[in-house]
Structures are given as C-alpha cells and as structure tokens.
Length: 122
Image (tube, one colour):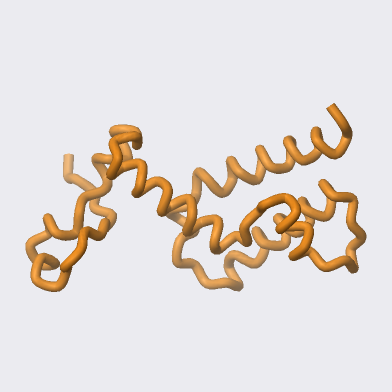
C-alpha cells in the first residue's frame, strides 16, 4: 500500500468515525461551531494529497470526493432516514424516528411524509 493511500485510509477512517457518531448532535449547528471540524477536514485533505498550506483546498476536497462538513452531516442524516424508510436501519434508530404525519399536532400542516426525532418514554 502506498504512503498516500495508507494516510488517506487512516485519516478518513478517523474523521468518518468522529462525524458519523455525532451527526444528530452536529446537525443545525452554526457555521462557526463547525469551523474547527472543517479546518480538520482541510488539513486532512492537504496531508493526504501532500499540498502546501497556501494551496486552495476545494480542488483537493473534490479530488478526494469529500464533502464540506455541513453537507456531509446533512448527507449522512438523509442517508439514515432513507435507510429507515427502506428497512435497512438498525432497530434502535427506527425506534427513535417516526413519520411527522403520525403526530396529531402536525397532521394538518404535513402534506408529504417527513420525519422528526421523537424519544419514546420507557
């Protein structure tokens, strides 16, 4: 395995684990709150592709097929909801999500199926 490939794999695995676990927490945060994660992503892209500090990072992210942090969080959450609808999500996730059309106070204003977080009382 080449140095570039192994460094890409290591960095991507670490960053993916950090952002995947906390997507629900990170969703909806202000850009200034997510800025440190974005800087880490930029530094990781520069490291993997051996770019200089002054080089533009957007082409590097595109070359690696990495999304900016806000779009990445949104993508992961949409993928999770999609998996829930098609029956591929874990049971503990399915138990946390419910269609908004099933919530009586939202029935009048919801015309299409949307999903909201709800916590079932034990």
